[in-house]
Every structure is written in structure tokens, then in C-alpha cells.
Image 1 (cartoon, one colour):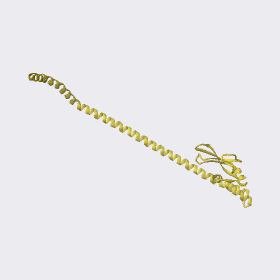
Image 2: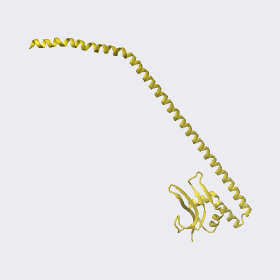
Image 3: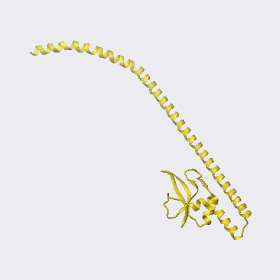
Image 4: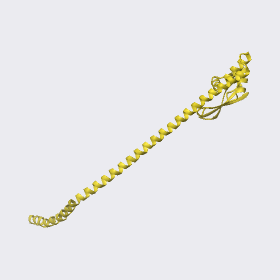
Amino acid sequence: MPVKIRLQRHGKKGKPFYWIVAADSRAKRDGKFLDKLGIYNPNTNPAQIEVNIDGAVQWLQNGAQPTDTARAILSYKGVMMKNHLAGGVRKGALTEEQAEEKFNAWLESKAKTVDSKKATLADAKGQAEAEALAAEKAVNLARIAAAVEVEEVAEEVAETAEEVATEEAPVAEAAVEVAEEAPVEVAEEAPAADAVTKKEE
């Protein structure tokens, strides 16, 4: 029975979550499996990976073939390295102690790399938040400045309107006086026009 180490999809739409399983290659992707070896969550940064290293090495030694993605994940967690060292121990090139020492040294170097990546991501996140805060402050200052300008323009318009009103007040009074005198003159001329029409008749 050909055995594959592969990913089995779980989770919801748009948020995949995978189990790392050893399964018959003829089984469905999300169907029966022989052994669950770990989990892989790509939704976090860096991705969350948990693997049963000894169980995965046992399946590899029994002939299980990992898919490309599963191989990359197993290599990232050191399963392929441990399998390689176990092969060296079987051939007599290494002792158990030497293999364990090499594997632990590899794990330490890998942990340092992961920690540096996490620190870099944290710094980048902090810098991005600082830039976003600075941009938001700039937008707020621009809004305040625009509001102050609008208020100043409104005050200037109000002052101008008051000045125009005070300057036009005498003119308006004169216009009212003229308007009051005009109907009187028209009223006095109206009887004369009636007399002319009566004479013509």
C-alpha cells in the first residue's frame, strides 16, 4: 500500500487549517488517514507548525513519500534532517550521541533564525503602526487648519456684509425719501391730464 505524507484541509472558507497526515495515496484528500503527524496553520505570521518528529521519521523510514508541500514543512521542522542522521547511524557513519548533538545544534540555529524573523516582523509592525499614527495626525491637523480657515473666511464675509450694510443705509434712506415724494408729484399732475382729455371731448 503506497503511503503519502500529505496535508488534509480543515478550517473554514478563506481560513484554511491543515492536518499533516500519513494516508493511503488512493484515499481522498480529506478522507481516511493512517496517522495524524501534526498541524499546519498558515493564517499566522510566521505560520504555526507542530509536528511529531519521531512519528514522521518512523513513517519516512517505512517508505512513506511526502508531497512537495509536506516535504517543505517537514524539512522546516527538522524531520528530514533527523531522518538523514538516522540513516547515517544505521550505516555506522555516526553514533547516536553524535547524531543527537548535530540535531540539537541544528534546532538551536533554526530557533535563532525564527526568533530573528519574529523580531523583524515585530519591528516592521511597530514601524507601520507609527507611520499610520503620524499620517492620521497629519490628516487631523489638516482638517483643523481647514476648519479654522473656513471660520476666518466666514468672519470676514460677515464683517464685509456689515460694512456694506452700514454704507448702504444712507442711500436706502434717500431712496425711501425719493419714493415718498414721487407719488405726490404724480398725484398733482394727474388732474391736469384729466382736464386735457375732457376738453378734447
